[in-house]
Amino acid sequence: MKHPISYLYNTVFIPKRSIQICIIGGGFAGLFTALYLSKYTHLIKSLRPRIILIDQKEHFLFTPLLYELLTQEVDSWEITPTFAKLLANTAVEFCHDTVEAVNLEQRQIELRSHKQITYDHLVLAVGQQTRLDAIPGITNYAYAFRSLADAERLMQKLQSLETDSKKHIQIAIIGAGGNGVELACKLANRLQNRGQVYLIDRRQKILRDFSFACQKAAHRALITCGVKLDLGTQIENFAASQITLSKNQQTYTLPVDLIVWTIGTQNWEWLNNLNCRQNPQGKLLVRSTLQLFDYPEVFAVGDIAAIHHPDKQKVPATAQAALQQARTAASNLRASLTGKPLKIFRYHHLGEMMTLGINAGVVFCCGICLEGSIAYTIRRWACVLRLPTFNHRLRVCRHLLSAAFRRVFPINQQPM
Ligand SMILES: Cc1cc2nc3c(=O)[nH]c(=O)nc-3n(C[C@H](O)[C@H](O)[C@H](O)COP(=O)(O)OP(=O)(O)OC[C@H]3O[C@@H](n4cnc5c(N)ncnc54)[C@H](O)[C@@H]3O)c2cc1C
Image 1 (tube, rainbow, N blue to C red):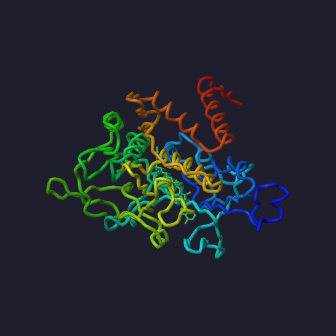
Image 2 (cartoon, protein in one colour):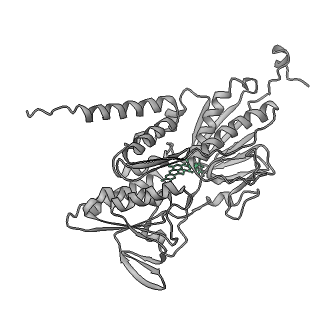
Image 3 (cartoon, rainbow, N blue to C red):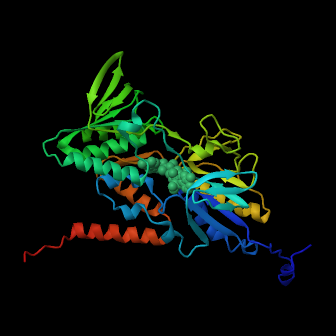
């Protein structure tokens, strides 16, 4: 039987209750899915969708600029806008809570606050966490670098080391992937002649997932920054003020004041208990439409998703890929609500950008590689353009332009 109100609208069926769409995780994948979806609500108005974004934090984190916090090249507000501000004037409601479990059969989300939310459609976008159990002692002695809290902890430690003006500070960064290389350059620039940064990796090569041009540029930048590269080196164990390493069958110790661990990621505990298909690394297996295999009403996007492509296309765990998935997920959610065919997700690699110290970087796009301060500036503005919402972009833009203006026309401080 048709719902009575549907006669008022002639042929449009209006459901008794609104369709509830829940998005868990407000990172690149989840927040952008919510924002794209919010733009579609006028197209699916008849379904009266209720879009709820759940995140354990009150703010989004723009991770590519997290390094710049350590060198005070950005202010924290620029890269951590609150969800309340970002979602004001959108159709998305924000729920500040931590998800502890999801029952896929009953379509129910359990929150830490003991509340339960039921959904008609769900987007899982909770990202991953740094894996800190690879070697004994990591959790006790090493710092992770993934969240704002990690960056603040690291800055506190650096400040306490820097207060002793006579101290020669030794920092070891473990892992010469993107995270390790960018961090090493920034920390070396911050320390200058106050200490030494070591970049340690068991492989012989830095940045193995990056283009050759970026590898070469990063190598040059590491040397310029004075970072000591310890490649082909295995970590044996950690202690409070030293690391035991082995290289070419020789074991030796390196005295350190600070260790930063950048290798490996793992799932949140509760995700492992989800009753759905996962790959050997614990990532959720999704169809090329980004839907879970046995639950078409559930989408998984971002770092937690392993996309099963007919042509075996590999999708990296990057913000670039998460943003592209968010667009497809939102469009496919709309399609499944309106009975239209769903799109197949295809990843388009747009290029690579890295920060390689203060006012230095590399940009590699369409076969062209730029280095130094020009690359830094391009990357900085590309990041501004990728910030969520027009209003936040505008605030950051104004701030950057006025800082640039002050640099060019410094205001003379008159002595009183
Ligand atoms: C320091 C750093 C620099 C990076 N730089 C780049 C770069 O330059 N370019 C690039 O392409 N990629 C970069 N990346 C990778 C990029 O950040 C990730 O690939 C991207 O953030 C993945 O997006 P996501 O939405 O899947 O997860 P995330 O962005 O991690 O978001 C997950 C969200 O889920 C929330 N959440 C988690 N668990 C729960 C729960 N139980 N309940 C409620 N909420 C929960 C979290 O609070 C978080 O907001 C960088 C990563 C790091 C750590």
